[in-house]
Length: 319
Picture 1: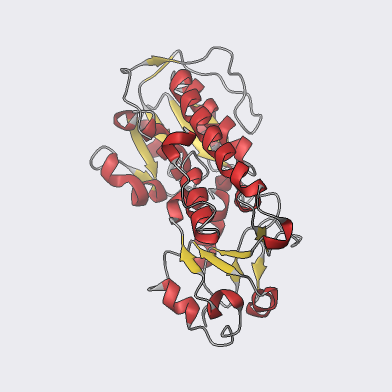
Picture 2: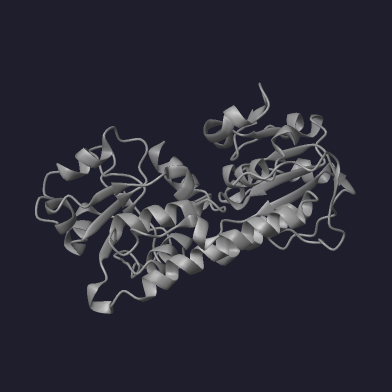
């Protein structure tokens, strides 16, 4: 179960007021983010979101009242901001018949739903419901484009553009500080999604060609897993210990008292991050869900790894 959750988080790894219902969509959108042809409805009033990252964007666009169903992970994160008793579906095995019966104008899906080689929304597509797929974002630029795409699909292009522009300004401000850190002073960082345990001794992390690695590099840090062959590698404890990171950043929300757990793991006593108590917990939703809130995680990363350099960083000034 933990491994499956890790895979889903890896792949799926600012509120704006609503401007009314039935917003007109962008006529020039003819393909989704996976390149599949789609035909947008003239207006969107009923939305199904099957990825928490997309659900967060829709909520921030002021469209929570138009979301008529979501995936279970979206509800776990944002249930309090969604309509009461909203139907929930397993993103890997959704009840397509029930989804069709809800009469949505558009359904946003995630590439993770097809990761096992099966189109689990085939019947939904064949029913004629606009099904827009958004694959797992590999870069910050991908995330910005996803936000703009979602906005265009639901008639909120201007609002989505403002969110993406604000995201980019903050990234630029953070990276300006990161670029000033001398190469010889850059800290080695281990990012972990899960802490190793007797049941699961591997450390799931982010390698090259991921937006998490990109964020670490932009703040002036070195990702110890950047040289791994896999995009989302699973490191053994031995490999992680040998990397001897200066800082450990964890997005593990399942291990109780995770920081103290890491600080007291057997065999890690002489790892610099443990020896110097440089272990920090990040917001799991912010770092794992590819939307505008990854910038919140990027700020957490920067101020944890380089507290002095980013001490005076101001989101308001960067916006």
